[in-house]
Length: 195
Image (cartoon, rainbow, N blue to C red):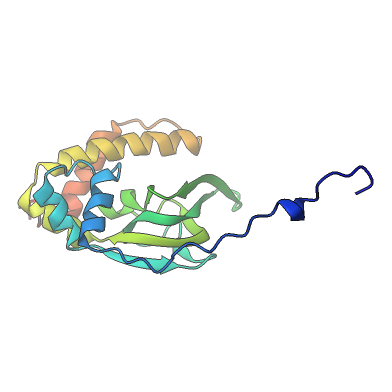
């Protein structure tokens, strides 16, 4: 004030809050799935439509835990809006944040696709709306197009390499893509006609 600088309050612009009541219909769900990086293997419109019919939208408040490290496998989420913190507990028991995922990102795909326990804890840090993809949705897709398992495994293998690098884990002794495909075939044996 002494030097006649403008106060930050005088520069504040008030805008109406965003419309948080929009609905995500079938058209929006298909568009989200078509752009989702780890689901994009299903490029065929019929495949996207099949998967979309098994998805649902959920809203989570700040602090909600979507998945806990070591927990049972469950759904994966495409983040429509908001953000989550991804933490991994070290051998000493302390948690370390390894990533923050936001709109457009996917969380929980490795566990859903392989049936493995959760590898990280995912906590909502900004009110989140997410598109839930369940095992039954992936199963329905694989029953119609078993060849997608190989494409999904290649994408997940790349993701595994990123996670290993981020978490500073030792290099795996076997090819991650082969390992993931084997785990997927075991987990989805009935859908792939292997049971």
